Image 1: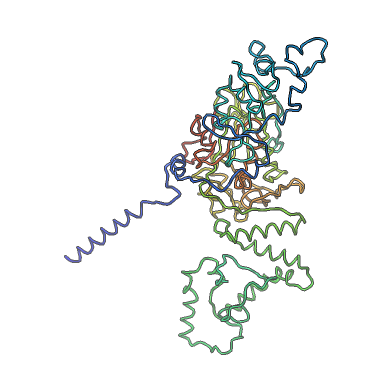
Image 2: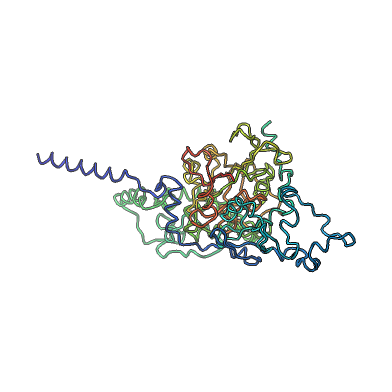
Length: 209
Length: 376
């Protein structure tokens, strides 16, 4: 009888230990999915030592806050060849448009939307060439030209502010530095041209014959 | 050797780092016969039996595999036998580096080769061992080519989990990424190895890989087509890691799936296990012209590979762990590629995952790739 009890205790404890050891709790399979893992582990996120300073510190950047997201973008005015524009455009545009004056910007063609929607003065302020102008007549700084683009391209603007449109500069780490619209798009002809691919793999063709 | 707990054997030709321990004899053995300890008398039969049992199984339970091989206690006869055999084998290898007439450089080369041959798996190394092997590889490259490279053994940082997003409505099929990847990662120019594939797909047919072309050569973007790229997706539950018989590939803490090229035996199980065609094999010795070699390297990344080992995209570990974007992200002229830290709630990659409609390839396999696709 005593022996029987002993066996019962032993087998019960064996069963118990089996139950506890079979519940694997290794770190590899802690989460059901990667989204669960990201959500859980980012709750205790305290920042990291890797930063982008090494790569962006020498660049001319300005801080902007769009859609409550703060990041850095490159300046524009210092990259325009003959800024300030008023060094040539001494008079308002209307007064400079006469036949006897030398033509400037003759090589510029506007290939952006169509003539119904856009002409030079949709963006450029004819009375002060040093700045841009919004549809409703508000001044826009050349360094913040994204405000010009976002008037029509709201969707792209929102994606850009979030980080889904456009490119980061050099580094994925913080502080975030992103390119602005005009770093990729020529505002006078904003679409991307077709071109030949960078590479052709002749070995792949051989193998697949 | 067992004192400093090294995982591999050191020939120790040039340096005198390892002093003889006081209780061992001049031949370097702790037991057995070299006849230099005269005070020890012949054993009785019983003592010998005890010692033999002790030698065969005695300490094996607390020794690792390497020590089991090299620290075995044995009787005089088999000790001499083994010593003679190993001396004959070793003579050839050692003669070049111990010989008086050969130069210091040859000796150093032999020393490096020996230590590299018997080093452990990178995954199991501590930081000092990692640094030592990286230093050896740098020195070895210098001895062979006379050129200096920099190689990192930087570990994964806490609170970092790398993720990638690919915008299929932005990609135009220019293949700048492919080109940048080949140059960054020192891929074999002879076999034209490429980690990234850009697939040209017909509009309206969805992701139809059977009809897609990943080696087009015409002006892009072509009418009626869209483009999407594939590469290693750095799965969080990687099937390639499970099948590796020698654990030469594993997932790092920052999510990168990496390979120790020196531990890989080239069985290509991982290539077969990967559902995304993410892995590449070196059928021949990779050739990269000396002037094109990217000298900014990482042990787990773009250091020079050898014949018969696997390799693949590492999200440019030499760049990403230093805070830079991978080469493909930097090269893309359309901004279709987004890279970042998934654990940082304010990162751009997190914004994409939370605000765009994202999906992954073959999600039902449960591989949990950290590579998402999305559209504008």
